Image 1 (tube, protein in one colour):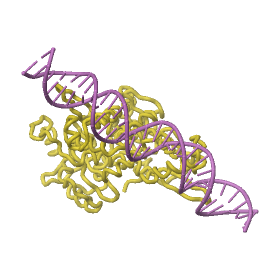
Image 2 (image 1 turned 60 degrees about the horizontal axis):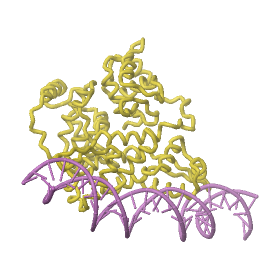
Image 3 (image 1 turned 180 degrees about the horizontal axis):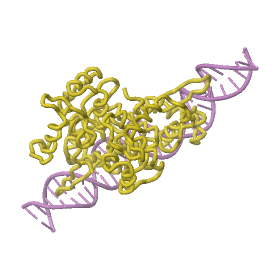
Image 4 (image 1 turned 45 degrees about the vertical axis):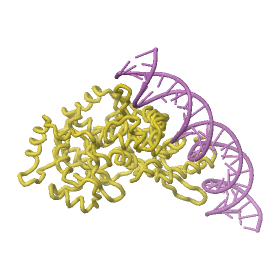
Length: 201
Length: 201
DNA sequence: TATCTAATTAGATAAGTATTAAATTTAGGT
DNA sequence: ACCTAAATTTAATACTTATCTAATTAGATA
């Protein structure tokens, strides 16, 4: 995801009329005239805004005779937001060297890893407790190559080195911001974005 | 969160120069002059953009003598994005009645709920398998009042009706978009936003 | 006080954008 | 072929915004 795409996405949402269109579409598909009436603008205005939303992939369209029905594209509404974070954090490594400090949480992590991994590095099971789960996920995620684009198949094979249930772990990677998916490829997020168990309440 | 705030947030990110400022700040705090030089603009331009980012709470500032250092506010970068989704989906209930269909997944849900809840409704443990976990979380989440603002303490008490580890479950609610947090209050998301196990790969 | 530096403000310009009315197009129906 | 309904395009207007230069302010120091 490059700069222009992210800017285009935010421009699409940077207008009250367009947000109100999306709010209305959240209730189900609607055509241009109905939108125009509900928002007290002309159909031409709806066409204008629909173009911007379409360019950012935020809506879908379906034609029935003369009428065009608009609907939400929830996938892009969520994932474009995540892509913004990825773009901001991806490039730089932090300028201040924080990594070499001996922190007290290292002991806890060691214990969890000893308990949940076999001596030859396989994951016994995914911890139910979130705190421990994040430690386990991070322990696997750091073995991924940063900046590399993984095909889904390739990522599955990698995860299988640790556990058979690759689908669950792949999904957890996304949910907890260890990785992000763009189209069909997966990529590691920068560490600043990872869910951190230290900050749990 | 109201419309104006969401629009203001997206306007703040709807400019390439401002995004590039955030990218630079992701590497650590920087002052105005350095930002101006790295972006090949004048300090006045940085002041202009900093004002917009500040109004959207996306950056923090620290003064040292004459120099003002800017840094990221990662909390708002993430949470304002989630607030957009919440605003879009919160209001409407879907116009088409999909709820009354007898779907085949109902059996699966029933089985999971029988297995993980005691006969008097307590959660035995949180399933490790994501699919089952989402069913369990949803089963609890539907008991929350939609549109109500829950204080953290109040939410904890509610969760404790089902399980002692309220912190983990509260966190899972956020992670899987069952609820969102704004300042110190928690609120149920509309169902369209909930993570759905049917859509898992 | 005078001076230096970083940041801000004020004013100007140029580019971008939201909206509308009017003309045009698209896809069917009679 | 003609008519109708919905959407789009065009052209114009008013408003917003990104950027710069030049002047000013704020804070620290000699």
